[in-house]
Length: 108
Image (cartoon, rainbow, N blue to C red):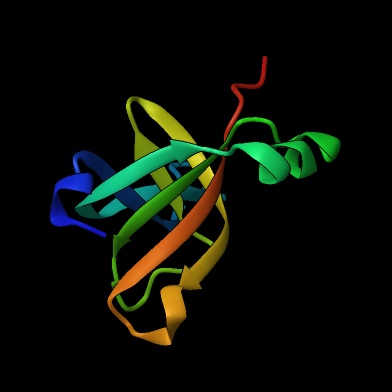
């Protein structure tokens, strides 16, 4: 992968538990790290497999390897939020990671 492909900014959001004014615990997401990434929609076989389980808004992000990233986090990209569904340390070289994430739909 060429460095020029990492042209999008994404922010990893980490879940934290806070206590509100009424004493109830609530889960909030705070910005952890903003990095450069490539972003691509699924295509071909991956798209049809995702669509079969209602995950048609899945995006693949590729970033330089960062320790500590896990599936409990979210990604903010272009004003949208994504739940991380899979993380792949490409060829186990600890150089790049491919992250699949599903868009979070606003509940109404």
